[in-house]
Amino acid sequence: MRCAIVDYRISETETYNLENLGYRVLKCPHCSDVYEGISGHPDIQLYVSSQKSIVAQKKLSPDFIKDLNQTGYNINLSHKALSLKYPEDIILNAFSTKDFFIHNTNFTDNEVLNLEKNKEVIHVNQGYTKCSILPVTDKAVITNDNSIFKALTTHGFDVLLLPYGDIMLPGFNYGFIGGCGGNTQTGELLFFGDLNHYKYGAEVISFLLKYSVEPVYLYNGPLRDRGSLILL
Image 1 (cartoon, rainbow, N blue to C red):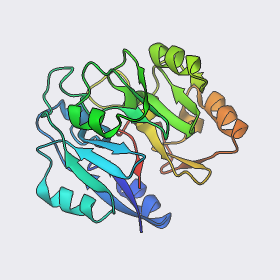
Image 2: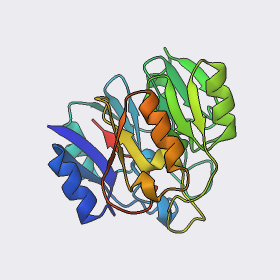
Image 3: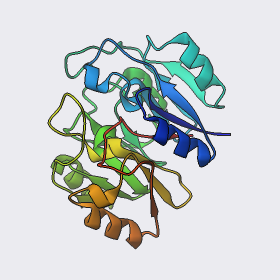
């Protein structure tokens, strides 16, 4: 069965809709070592490689690691521990494709760097890289971050750059677009929320249409940054 890794605070409606799409929902547990607003975010506690490997933060619950082991992915633990103070909370918050590894590599955990050593590295200033990138295809993405836009465009990506704002993330002024959903790799992009409630929803829908990717809404309401939707 396909798995969806989500923040433990996901709503019953979102859980139901994911299960109805055929996913086993794995709820990433609370981490007391980072800000409460991101304490259940999968993209803070896990790095998932295209090589069917996961690097999990070293203090992740053993019970949750058992769940991850059932996904068929190889599970490794991070070299460093997560911590409240930036940049110690972004050591796993990297983004990758089949050919590229993208992060502020000054702070990437060594376990991740070793795993992705054969990919071309794109260094960006934004440490919350995975939070900031919503993948549409392997070479087309959506972001709010200008440094990511410039770096990826230089490497041949098609990038839709959107202003910050109008994305909910409790405890912060706004969330990031990359944290609002996940790509099924089968022509659909699942969203925590509905683009019709998003200030820049028309631009996103147009960009998805360009690549024949269909938006699927897990609940009817504003977009929420839940720390990415990791689909395995």
